[in-house]
Structure formats: C-alpha cells, structure tokens
Length: 241
Image (cartoon, rainbow, N blue to C red; front, side, top):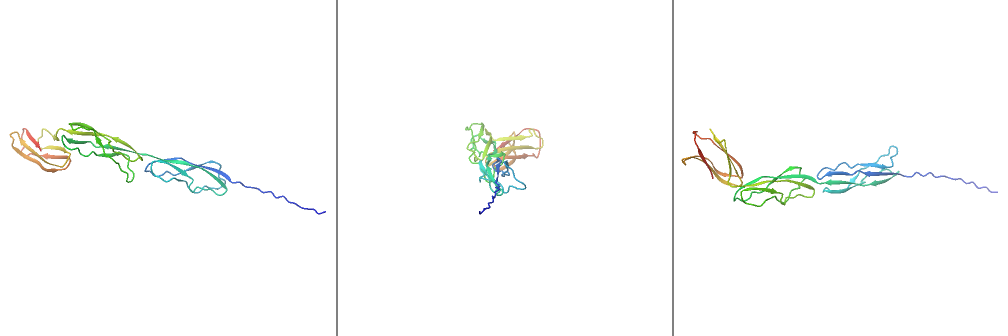
C-alpha cells in the first residue's frame, strides 16, 4: 500500500486598526490670523509609539463665511484605516463704528462737507468706506441731525454709526474773553470757508483805534489778541467783517 502525507498550514491575519479623527470647529473675526487647526481622536487608539503626521487644512478664502476644515496632509501608517470627520472654520464680521463730525454754517452759506472719523475698530488692508453722510433738510437757523446717509462698507463688517448736529447760525460765531478786560482781550471766530476778514476796534465816538487783523483765513477756528497801548476805563466797540 502507498501512504500519502499531508500537512495543514494556518494563516494568521492582522487587520488594520480603524481610527476616527474629528476636526475641531474654529472661528475668527474678519482680518485676523487663522487659529491653529486642531483635531481629536474620537474612536480607536494609536498603538505603541505610533503618531499622526501632517496637519489639517481649510478651504481658501478670507471673506465672511464658512470654510470646511479638511484632512490636509494628516496621515497614519498603512496599519490604520483613517476615517476623517470635517468641521468648519467660520469667519465672522468685523465691527467698526464711525462718528459724524459736528458741522456749522452761517445762514445762506453753502453746506460744508460732512465728515466723520473711525471711533471703534479698525479697517483691514485697503478696505474703505463708500458713500456719504447726509443731514436733515432745512435752511433756517437751527440744528439738523447728521445721519448715515449712503455711507457703507462691505459685508465683511458690521457698521455702527454715531450721529452729530449740523448747526445753521444766524451770524458768525464770535467769542470775546475776558469781558470786561484790563490789559488784553481775546477774540475767537469760527469760519466754514476761505474768507478775507477784518477785525477792528472803535471808540464810542466812532474813531477807529486799532485794526487787530486784516487778511485771508482758512476754514476753522481762529484766535486774535488785542493789547491796547493805552488802557482806560470805558466801552469799546469791535467790528468783524
């Protein structure tokens, strides 16, 4: 009889370990630097000294909106099956506040330009405002609120606005101090446009005693001082033209 010899070989299979990596949701304000993109192992575990290499990435874009956080270059050895769960990086609007500048004019004059300045927050890069402020209609002496008008900025911002008053005066605003005076007196006058002006001093008799100033001035607040050569008690008249 012929006898046959058989051997049985058993195979031992090592399966890949599954790791679930979940990105952390992040946020930033428009114009700020991106936060560090982080993640958690939410299922499975690393074996021994195994490490996760690489880093996450996100969809490109810097405007207000939501951008997916992706796996990027994140990887493990071939001993693992990686399941990656995305998250979002949200860019939120930047808050800025502008405040209108109080403006004045004399009855009958043309309106000066309505201006404003940034009082809260900062602009990013070359971003700028568009449009102009407006004021309540009217040409009688009084106060008229200055409103936001068509002033605007991109959707990457939340725009706050603080109003001011536009004042129409019946005459030029002139202040004198101290009054009465002893050795000198000061005059302050506010003008809204280029003008030739003259400030003179007269006695009650009508005789001119001094020309304090005569010349061209720019818009704004101007200060003039008068120091008489001979001081005596009495009344003086000033004339501003």
